Image 1 (cartoon, rainbow, N blue to C red):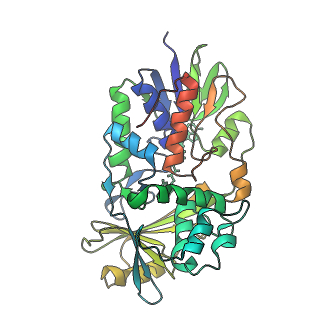
Image 2: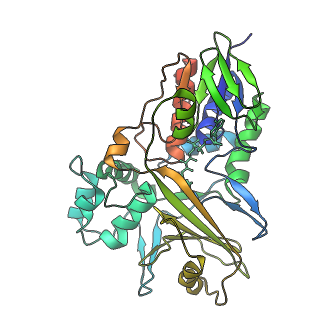
Length: 387
Ligand SMILES: Cc1cc2nc3c(=O)[nH]c(=O)nc-3n(C[C@H](O)[C@H](O)[C@H](O)COP(=O)(O)OP(=O)(O)OC[C@H]3O[C@@H](n4cnc5c(N)ncnc54)[C@H](O)[C@@H]3O)c2cc1C
């Protein structure tokens, strides 16, 4: 019997591992606990809004080469944004534009941000800089989903350097215009099925040993040549491997508002001075994102912040609040130092997921790169690529 790669978890890490192996002609079975793929990156039909919405507005950066490479291979749909970010101050209505050639910061603070001393937080490096409130603070929350007071300046600098090295396009973002499932997850699933991958939903892994995967619904006996990639969040890995990866996490809140009419907003708008941090609009749905969100957010006060920007006066419209309480790890120095590598104590069993050791914060890029890395290791195939 041909060697089989079992991938457990159909988030982006698992999908990437499965696609890398399928494309290279390997036999793959993908197992997922939920009834759908995508994990923390998914869409769903919301009956309250009568629209399909994403669990969170996801942006991919131009520097996220693994995600863009995977998206290209599977025919995913991404729409590029202009290489700039527009901001607005909710306190006084002032607006400004950030582009690679027009940064609202001095060269000294830019240098400090790019080359910080080890062991410092973003606030220690930049908290007193002139551009902190209007640039470094929102950028730190957006890139690391962690408040500057505790966010690791070294990781922040690593992402900033990649942006700077990418040149004029470095600030370009990409969005999934019809939603995460339609534009990203479904195309990957379609290519997996075309390539012969078996996809099994409603299969929660509850135990694992070198010879067996035990799911709540079935037992899978492993052949001697079979390999396993566990593309699971840390708490699920702890459950099946008995490890202890209790990491602090941060919440991302997304609040979707159904507008009375479609509104045009060409690119996400960064907001400072209020609770809302980013405003996205897709047709007649406006979405507010709050990174490192508090435990409760008030839709009415967010609507009061964004209604004037959208020129949509009137009462609070139908809305949906989505609190992803374990959206990402908290990117502080102590947590980052504990991110583990992809190997486990069980021979032939490897880990993937955005939370593993990576040059990237927990994002689609770290998830996809880790899925690719785990497939390479499991199959002994250094030649697997997304570019
Ligand atoms: C609201 C929000 C906004 C975000 N915005 C961005 C953004 O703008 N840009 C960006 O790059 N990233 C963003 N991210 C981060 C990005 O979504 C994640 O980094 C990425 O989706 C993680 O993928 P993963 O495969 O590592 O994990 P997951 O998506 O968590 O996948 C794990 C999978 O394993 C399954 N599973 C769990 N336990 C078991 C079990 N026992 N047996 C079988 N299956 C199991 C789960 O159901 C899930 O499908 C955002 C995240 C959130 C929540």
